[in-house]
Image 1 (cartoon, one colour):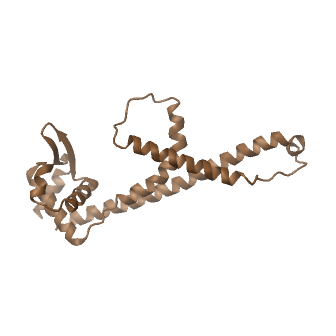
Image 2: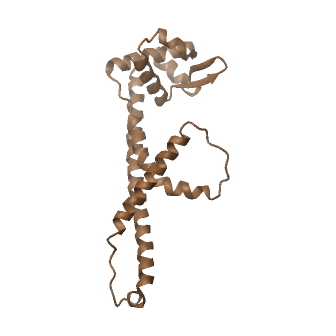
Image 3: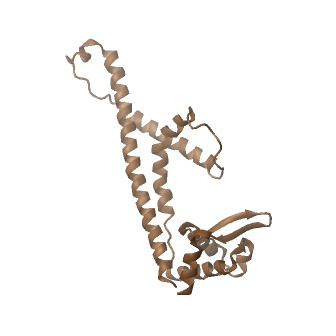
Length: 205
């Protein structure tokens, strides 16, 4: 097994961890900003409602007791909305829509929730293969490199364990060595052209 093969997997895992950390930081920042905005609006409304004494500073107003439960309810509703939206659009291509419009409001509102889900998505992208599975993945990559274009249905004859085969193929796709394409003859796996020289060097070692 080539050291380059192992380095690329390790590099991918480091990038996935870094992306998860950035998603965590972004989610914490945006949830904090959303809470501050909600608190500011609530205080503004209560200040106006309670009259001149509060405006002139003659009375001190504290945060209402209902603010935190309300903020939690809004956050949960946003998470549910984001989860439904993600499930609805997961396998749909991006449609054409204006760059500026009211649709951006929903994207802004859902951004904290999407970053929260992004933490799990990035952690799920970490490649967790045993040493034996890495050897099998290397052999699979060699086969795809030699074939160039390999029908997905033909791989079952070489790797009979369908569950393991899927794990290996997903790992190779995550690293960026192969792509899955749909053709008139069915689904095929191909070697990515931008890594052809790298793979050639790796298998010549």
